[in-house]
Amino acid sequence: MVDQHSVEWDSPLFRSTQSQFETVAKRMKMDENVFNRLRWPERVLVVSVPFRMDDGSVRVVPGYRVQHNDALGPCKGGIRYHRSVNLGEVAALAMLMTWKTSLVGLPLGGAKGGVAVDPNPLSRQELQRLTRRYTAEIINFIGPDHDIPAPDMGTSAQVMAWMMDTYSSVKGYSIPGVVTGKPIAIGGSLGRLEAPGRGVVYCIMEAAEKLKWKLNEKITVAIQGFGQVGNAAARKISKIGCKIIAVGDHTTTLYNEKGFSYESLQQHVMTHQFLKGYPEGEEIPWGDLITLKCDILIPAATGGVITEENVKKLRCRMIAEGANGPTTTEADLILQEQEDIFVIPDILANAGGVIVSYFEWVQDLQNFFWSEKDVNQRLFEIMQKAFHEVYERSLEEKVRMREAAMRIAIRKISTAMLTRGLFP
Ligand code: GLU
Image 1 (cartoon, rainbow, N blue to C red):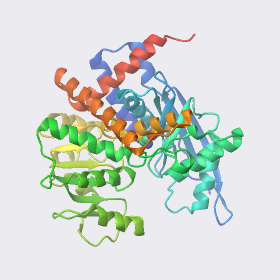
Image 2: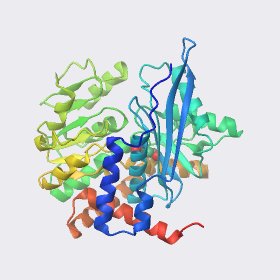
Image 3: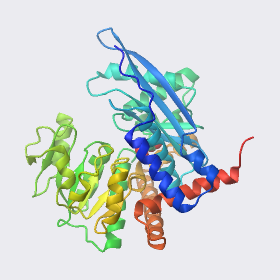
Image 4: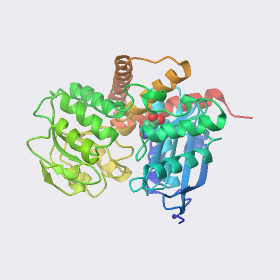
């Protein structure tokens, strides 16, 4: 079976991520040469990945790894398994990683990888064979000192373990630092799993302080996505006492004005894997969660969910972007005019994942592991500092949070590129 293989830049996410960069860069009057270079990735690898299914047949799927920029250090970014993955989407996500690592001050550049496959129907063995062959195909492109993958949508700590094992087996010795987001048993970091969701909530806490909100049971929250990001965000936000009135994953979306118990949702997901069948709460259409009346909206599933069509119907007061690229450029232009909605942009809100990935990589390279308390404390310090920088910059330069975040990120990369100069 050969799956559709389309090598196309032209994805909506690439167009919107590139044009968002162009708009901000023009306003910043940045160096023309740096501008031209940053509009496109530095390196792109397209591979075709054959893997054997349990019935003996061979399936071939397209895979990608894109390195957008390495001016600040080795490239870093996740690997996505999803049916709709294409080159443009991966390139856009790689660009977002460059902004993200720069914004929060990590000595890393931006990359992303992906395979156009729906992992859900695959058996564990099929998933393992796919992962090992994809890793083999990109083996010379990645490495602990030049490009370090991590989990993203559709991949997990186990997938990272297979990647690490494949890489190490071929090289002939154990190299844990080649990927992050690994299981603890093979050099993963404590706190990595919850880090993206935790980081989202740290940002909400800082924002609430600035906006003089009290985070208690009167604050209602709607969370789209109950994977790694949404789940950990739900846990932390319910722990600080806010009321989760809506949750959704790809199997169902649920609304309950009295509020959900996180523990009971988690119990259900542990047994049934997904939210489908959870007994308390009314089932609503997936898209309706976005426009529910609530205080805080956390889109933590996939990109492009806040669109030109629904943006004017938003009834939240704060958006914390747990997913990458949840707001389209067209929607963002409209959102910028809506002074009553405070937006914490993706490159800030969900940076917790890559921050603790950075910690994991440092721990692997040093063979010296930290306590969970240390990891969380350091994560908090970096997120808090980044939030304040963005907030102050948005006040000083009279721009919204997203633009302020991008200006900070782009300026640092531009300085690094100009300082390094041009080869040859
Ligand atoms: N996939 C995550 C992100 O989009 C984490 C990347 C990483 O840890 O390298 O930020």
